[in-house]
Length: 167
Ligand code: S3P
Image 1 (cartoon, rainbow, N blue to C red):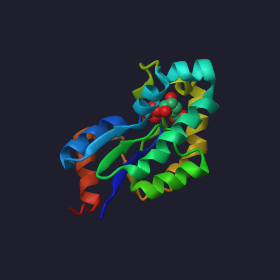
Image 2: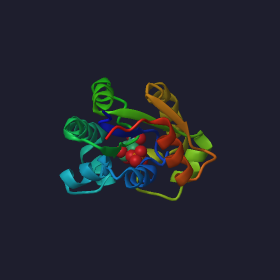
Image 3: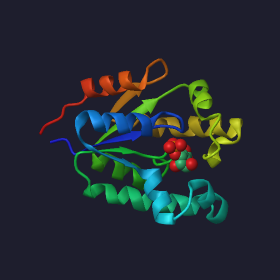
């Protein structure tokens, strides 16, 4: 029995947009972990980074990931850094089918360019280096979906075609 679908991938991969549409299609719940972190902290992610630093943010992120164990029939959009900690990667696997929404660096850069909400996307070189170091963690996913050339609705259809849903 399928527990949940967990979307992972770098900033700009489309995790939240695809996740919302996928959940609607499956009649499942949708959860955006970054939104839960903001709600628990009472402020935006960029404020958390600015005031408390990245390590504090990662602790909040791990705390939210631990709560995924309680979810059923939920599509979860994670933040791009959810895979960094080994303990998180175990939690992701335990929570359900992990799907990596993969995209090329240029695509990701274009998608995040106009958005100032991401503290780790401000510097292009740092952005590229982060993707490089994280790729191998994303590739541990159960399913990898390339997204560069596809519309959101096409990505959803491709995911639906690759997963088996019971009840
Ligand atoms: C981060 C990605 C962001 C957010 C935070 C850190 C990262 O989420 O969690 O800014 O380390 O890649 P998105 O992947 O939804 O942009």
